[in-house]
Image 1 (tube, rainbow, N blue to C red):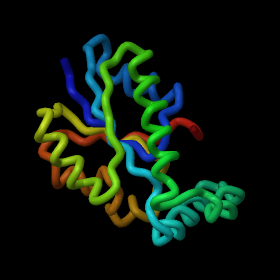
Image 2 (image 1 turned 30 degrees about the vertical axis):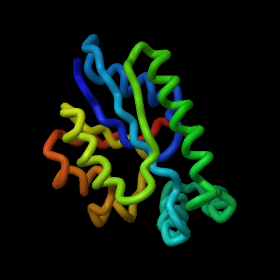
Image 3 (image 1 turned 60 degrees about the vertical axis):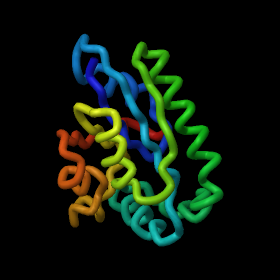
Image 4 (image 1 turned 180 degrees about the horizontal axis):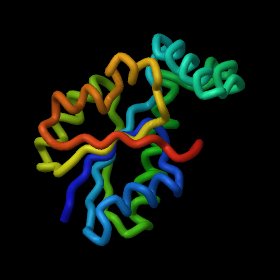
Length: 157
């Protein structure tokens, strides 16, 4: 069985689930999902810039209405449960947890703990962070010791 660590920032859509569960053809895949709830207000500007770059001006204008930090944990837990259930319904083994601090340290520890074959980072585009190679996938490539695949979410959850 192939073991993937799937790092996400929001609930998987049905298109996302189909995409990640078919990456390896007919080979069985076990997913270990890490979801980090939205960060603190310092991340708000970067998210707003990304929204503007994607032409989602309405999203940028409403960025302040989205729960962050402690308030986002409940939303994050629900998104994690929805994602795990969707992966299981598709026929994959799936377990997961929320990551609150230092997501790359948690990722590295999990990869070592389970002997993962790969890491899949599935997020919305983050143009500013990607430009400066500060996004999760770019930073993980230097840290985890297994292949890291960066994918973009197919649609809004």
